[in-house]
Image 1 (cartoon, rainbow, N blue to C red):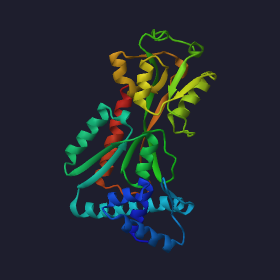
Image 2: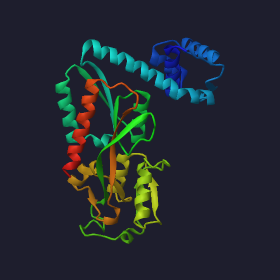
Image 3: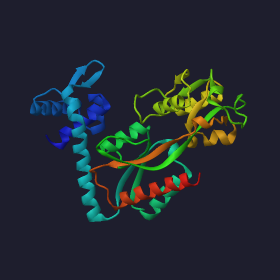
Image 4: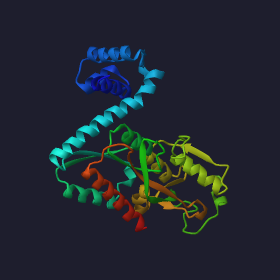
Length: 303
């Protein structure tokens, strides 16, 4: 197997299309197909089912994919280590994060980093917590900042802060009066939350555990797979939501959302920084990791 074949395979798996992969790689579709045929011949197994809806990984393809992604990540690490040795603090660092964690402390830390390493190109991308972990695992991001720990053995996941959660409702809600309320006061309320991911690293699981711990067992949860949509629905009085405090700072300041004080639902979400366990981190990447950890810790300490 050569890296060109592996890169082709991973790109098709990611784009779920031979034609899209060809465009991404700047090659013709027949050339892409030929590389996959050679790889399948070498491995003695079909890697994709060619379906009308697009290629789908076979069992063999699914088994190969994480190893193929690791091969590409290791190749990028090797090239980066040589560049660092020859050129010093240059190159590109990709940082993936959950958008609500881009607070003033973090952006200040990133700004200080770019002043210290002016020749390093810092590329930012936002994603869900699960996606952040996947981006880092595949080597598409050098570092990631997400909610909850990532238990993938290929990643190092370090808790650097805890994000408070708040129960919010629309302005003028019957319980948004500043007084403390018992959980039973929430009987009959509709909850707006992310769809269940059946994972202990999801916001949906976090909400379910908080509700059960508070004795709120008969509840209706409306799954909404968008933070912005959740906030707009709560503002419109469609339901209530338990959200990270940083996610609703602006709405609370503008008074379009109000806090409902139910002590039994108070809690915090761990914020984790992640990187590949065996990945290469140059001096600039290590400095960025320290800057991010310090920035987020500083923000949490101020609460």
